[in-house]
Image 1 (tube, rainbow, N blue to C red):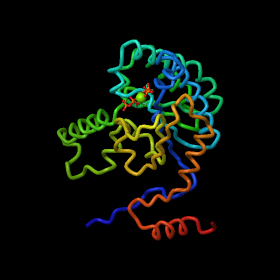
Image 2 (tube, rainbow, N blue to C red):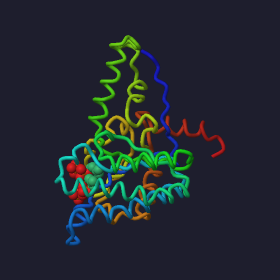
Image 3 (spheres, rainbow, N blue to C red):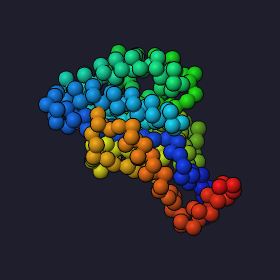
Length: 258
Ligand code: IPE
Ligand code: IPE
Ligand code: MG
C-alpha cells in the first residue's frame, strides 16, 4: 500500500481559512416584525464587521456562503432583492476593502447571476486583485453538488481527450477542478442560526474542518462571538485520524522552541 503523505495543518493556533454559513436573516426579520429582505439588509452590517475583524486578526481566507443554488427557488421578490443588495454592497464596500488590503473573489455558478450583480463583482475583483491581505470569497449561486458535478465533467472531458488516464486521477486532480481551487480547505466552519446541517456547502473541502454552530442569527452575530469561535477552535485538537500522542509529537517536532 502506498504511504500517504500527511499535509494537514495540526497547528492549533490560527485558522488560516474560516468559512461561514450565514443563516438566520429571515428569522431575525420576522422577530423584528420586518420583511425578510430587511433581514438581509441587516445582515450586511455583520458581513462588514466580521470581514474587518478577520482582516485585523490576520486571517488569510474568509469564505461566506452568500447565496446557494437552492436559494434560486425562493420567492422571486426575495431573490431580486438579494441580487440587488449584493451589487449595491460590493460597490459601496470596495474602496474600504482596498484600504484594508482585502482581495475579493467569488465561487459558484456566476453565469446565473444577473448582469448588474456579476459586473459589480467582477469590477471589485479587478480593483482588489493587487491586495495581499485577507482573501474574501463569496459563494454565490453555489452548491457543492453543482461544483462536484462540474469537476467530474471536466475530468471526464480530459480523460476522453486522452489528456489524462483514469488511474492518474488523484485527490489533487479533484481539488484542482473545484470552483475553490484557489483556496485551502477551511480550518473552521461556522454556522449561525442554529441548524446542524451543511446545506450543500463545500462538501469536499470541509472533510476535516472544525465545525462551530451557534444559535445566534446572522444579523446578531458580533465580532466578540466571532472571536469566541476562533478561541474555541484554538482549544481543539485536530487529529486527522492520528492518535493524540502522534499529534503532540508532530507539533513538538514542528515547533522545537515552543
Ligand atoms: C440566510 O438567511 C441568507 C440566505 C440564505 C441568502 P435566511 O434567509 O436563510 O434566514 P432564515 O434561515 O430564513 O432565518
Ligand atoms: C444556507 O442557508 C445558504 C446560505 C447561507 C446562503 P439556507 O437557509 O438556504 O439553508 P437551509 O435551507 O435552511 O438548509
Ligand atoms: Mg436559512
